[in-house]
Image (cartoon, rainbow, N blue to C red; front, side, top):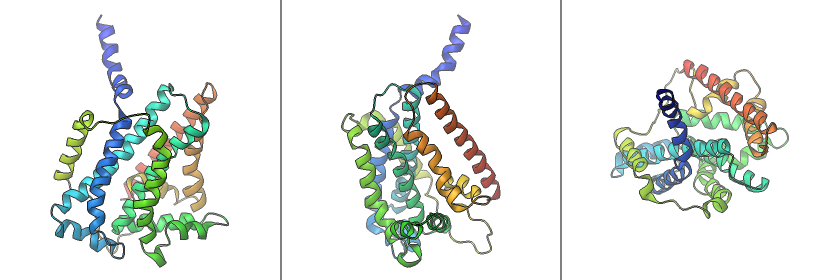
Length: 289
């Protein structure tokens, strides 16, 4: 009996992972991000990103709260989306055609790019570092690098205007199109996620959103937390290999994830090993900060 109870206690976290509506939590966090983002966007000036971002906290009533709510709800959206996808892959119960599966998985890079462009729009040291590295990666793409950079960034000539357009329109539309067939099948109720909502609001009240002004003489400036492993990899590999090929490896495996073993097991093992390696690179990068 004691051994059975101990086994049940050990399995409790796994049961929680499998039954909690992670996808619904991600969607609720996205709603909070959009609502708070509207308030922030009304005060944001793409021609003076750093000044307008700091002014939001100083001039707008409860500006610090709204900016923090947008920041933390956006982080929660991406993290919950990752967990939701992981649980779906782990349970392997859903039946999707290959095209539908690729379309759903495309919400992951859309969410990541939404988070990334939000950092760039801050215009602080972290945002500038992220934007500079992203431009170098785009320009390293063979044959079409300049066109890719002109489409997505072009920071030298356009400032953050193109990034802003992608953040508030382009990526939202692409992500919505990718997720729409899935969202039509499921309903999300606010009352089912009250704990998540209250925790996000409380965190936004207690902790201000990060803002890192330029510090002269600093030899190393870190980008966003999810960018650190890639930033460390760029120290050893070319921008194209480190910034394009390496991130596309797990995404490609996810898109073409086999439905049956043993091929599925090998693909999942490769993704897990990639994540572990990226975690180690992130740790080394954190040591430099």
